Length: 288
Image (cartoon, rainbow, N blue to C red; front, side, top):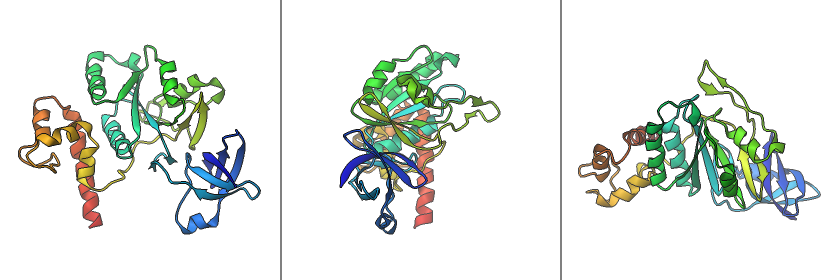
């Protein structure tokens, strides 16, 4: 019996690397199908070296469904500020999902050199930084070594819109990766998908996954209280709300709404929260 980490998954076959640096292509035993348990990239597994069968999946610290990956330490959320335009709705959605899974989020804003109003962008970046999120920017230079240091001894993932520079960043970390990059489709205003599968790539002493680009993901919860807890500034302000379990929607004496009205909380972020709340309410209606 050997132990290793799944670093690649294509068409039901999984590439596993061991602590000794060996590689094995394996398939899961039939018992996983009966248990409806599917191995994911990032899983720590036991496997039979002779039969090339995955025997056991060890308990996961966390997991995501889109991208399909497990045991992440950090997620680099990569968003362009132009071409395509900065999508704060998707950013807040991803931050909520990652917060729920207790994974560290690091935001990378790209293509600042294409932006005319840097002052407005700075307000947005400073807001997220004040919430405790690390942020990096590119367009006028990027501290690649600092970002690379974030990867060391961790399993990390790049996520965000397609066509915003994820593969370009990874190529800079290690030019031997030779990841495919693509131009922006002007007709759609969004990137063409350049990554077709999830794979962990060795960067320094850590692992980084380049994942298929996506524009929509589902929440891993279906209750409004969980959503409110995933917005850091909302959770911190709940103690000042009239109701202990305030959802910051229609309740009187809501401290969050007061902060929105005083422009302390970004109105756009609160609007995104309201949008997510409506989405979850629709899910609840269908479920119950």
